[in-house]
Length: 193
Image (cartoon, rainbow, N blue to C red; front, side):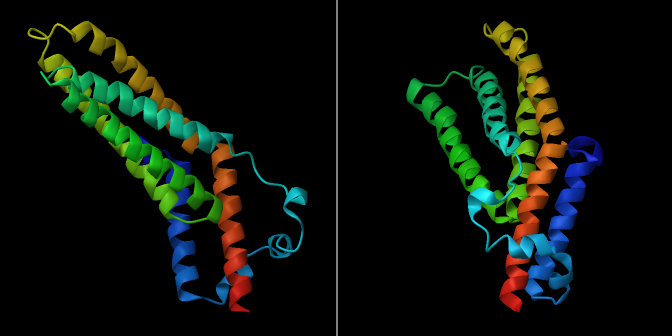
C-alpha cells in the first residue's frame, strides 16, 4: 500500500485514526496534543489567522474527475450502449463524485478523518478504472473501431494518477490536513475542559 499511495499519505491516515480514537474517547491526552497557539486561535478573528494553502485539495477534485472521465469514457465506448444509457452511466457517477468531493472539502476543513478515507477510495477507484480501461482496450484490439481513441487516454490516466499521488504526499497537502486536524483537536480539547 505504501508503494501505491505513498508513505506520507499513509502516515497522515494512520495518525488521523489515532487522533479520531482519542477524540471519540474524550481523552485528557487531547489537552497535551493541542498547541497553545491553536487553543488561542478561536478567540482571534479569522482574517488574522494563518491558514495553509488549500490549492492542493482543490486540484484533487479536478484530477479525480479527469481520471473518471477518461477511464469511464474509454470503457463505455467499447460497448454498444444507447445514448440515454451511456449518458446515465457516464454523468451519473460524475455528479456523485462531485458531491462527494464537495463534502470532502467540508470534512477537511473540520479535520475529519473520513476526508482522507474518501481520497483513499477515490484514488483506488481511479487506479481500478484505469486498469479496467487498459484491459478492455487491449482485449478489444481486433474488434473495436475506437481503439486508437482509447489508447491515447491511457497515458493521460497514468500521468493523472501520478500527479494525484504526488499531491497527496506533498508538503502543502500534509500541512493543510495537519493544520485542520490540530484545530479539531484543539476545539475538542477545549470542549472537554
